[in-house]
Image (cartoon, rainbow, N blue to C red; front, side, top):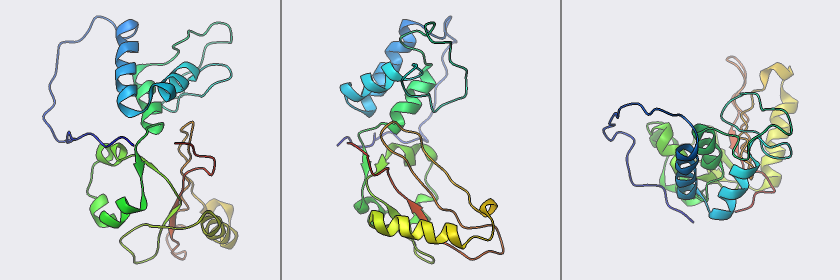
Length: 196
């Protein structure tokens, strides 16, 4: 399992003069370098060579229209799309130990970059009301909890969902209903078919 990078998101950034191109071999090279930091050679090939292809994976980074079938390049993505899909296909994993070590109050002060660099969930997790840590629950318990929350709503408009479209996993969150409604726990889970 790969570890999160040591660099901190608050490191000083540097600016360089603009390049004279935005794509081509340098962009593919940079995308490959980034992808290989996040995941394996096999998964990098799977994600990059199937992204935005007819029978492949849509880029999770934007809604840019894909060219018609028969008119797509083999590398039909931008650098940001390559980074985005490989962030989600990363070999890094966030386990129950991570959540035992890091309370939600601490995680709320971390940057999105740091949180993203920790990896993907490995099992369903729940944050109970008044708790400061997520804890693991079984798939059966997670689905039962989500089902109970959804069926108790007065209207489907009270439900809000966040899903992550990585090719190998999905995150599902059942968020509390709007103000004035009862509080509900948050549940996050990878897809039952997740592969590492």
